[in-house]
Length: 202
Image (cartoon, rainbow, N blue to C red; front, side):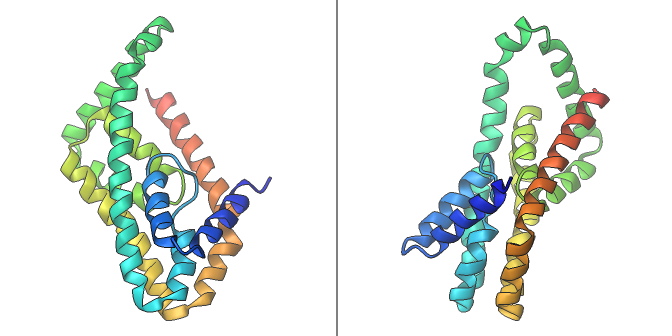
């Protein structure tokens, strides 16, 4: 099933639209908390069309990714609070809250490790950043360190793409097109693995 290939083709269509910059901002925003296609699929053809604006597009995408990560953070916090009655009815609230408290304690004890995990998560394509933005909101990671880590991780991705496009041109975009399906499903596997690890640990 070529789910990610189809979404990739749609994003490429947006990249050729006269309002491509607005679509890029929208995609970068929603990708940070829900949409399964990374903004690089739009960034690459847009950068190829105007190489001199590659880093401008990268910075624009980064800005709206950070705004989207705040939405994911808020959704994680408020959705968890709103689900309290449901979780309590299912007798799941107590163990989940215990796990959240354990994560908060680890965050306070090993905050440097937490920052590294957040920055690495922002480097990953497709799904993990959404998982981390929601989880950060549930656990209550301080906003400023959270945004700094998201900026560092996601910034490296978009700036590296801009650099590759400036240097290698169409060859960089062809590699992305060739491997999009593998990248997408690999990210899903990573998410499932993270969820399984968390459930087994707590």
